[in-house]
Image (cartoon, rainbow over the protein chains, first blue to last red):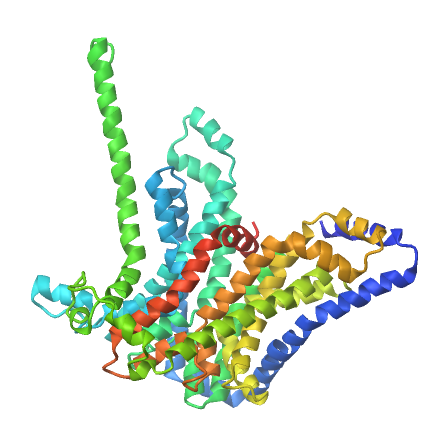
Length: 292
Length: 297
């Protein structure tokens, strides 16, 4: 497509007689692109180069990789990604089918359903945090009223705490991905389903032979993008558990900040560089998909 | 079955089974809908519950406010608690920073998208790829380098540290969305303008900007919301009480063991309302303009 527009553009500029005009277009192009290049150079390139420079000592990596908290964070990150993303995307795929159904109350529910995505995450995550408070939280108080026993100390157990961080993450991002997949489902022609109904196809067959083949690419692109974004999810973990108890629920995104607070900047940078093998292939895949 | 039974009861039975089938479908739908509603609303409801309860009632584990009260809002707006001494200043900081990020992102991204898409500046493809690459690197991983860089530029603890950092994070996606949108404008417009002897700047101002208005609204909203919602960068780059934005002030409530959670939730509710309102007002633009760019299928 880009080649078509290119030749068309050449035709357009060709219509302009003087050659000086063409270079004035180029000149203005360069002037107009400069603001972004400045921003990019000063606030992206420079920090990145600086980060690599701070993380160039091999000693930092030896120290980082032998830190049990780092090892735990890598495991946590993988668990977070694996459970979080698959749970979220599978739910989004199913719910996108649900929101396709024509009912007045489902339409109303769509509007409400977007709320987690529309409100900032800090107040809602802190709200969940207090709900899970072992003494005063509404969950454990209800638990006590029903069973006359103290409820579990939810966020004091590393496994449970990480699990709740994943749930918060899913709560926040589910609406967005449901909307994306819903737009994918809406793009499928209704004729296909009608023809399948005439042929007596079951619901499952319709999904398998019509919906899934048309949605597959969108689904996997969404999965990749969602993986990248989940890797960078700082808020869900930091605001719910603070990395605790005993630094056992950190993920790579929060670990860098922890080292910064301990004034170990080289370890912080080494954490970021260590995350690159996970991020770059995904970014490469997305770039390939989008620059087609 | 129909052969053995006479016609009238058969129809009746059919109608009855039809009704039953409909009822079952509705019940099944509600079985999804009701849990989904509770799941979505629970944290938000809990937030509101606290905002409208006094401390006693909030901490007693009730699911409904005993005596709904506006006292918390009075305390927050009157800055009557030491956690809230700078509430209005912090609210203003949030507004100012979000607005500046929105305006600057629009300027930087519109000019870049125009140069790349319409003027076909040399190397435009490379600039676009760099922008995309920046967009895909999670911002959390750039935070620490950005913090050190801002310290180096001497901007720490000023509004501008956060504004410029958010500009760097918001503009790549903005450029991408605007470039996609401006590729769709017909070339004939440019040609006609050139024929009439328009300069690139006139083309930009008189043809390009008016046609791009819907996308500009979407991108501007995106940048404003991104800046308003940002926690990590704000808490790294700003640390003086009077320079904080609201989300950082909210996070600071956690530093004490006996935090006034009902006030925290009240402030949180006030902070969450503007973006929710903006989102619902611009929903049409946001969904079509932004989701289309996010995942091009």
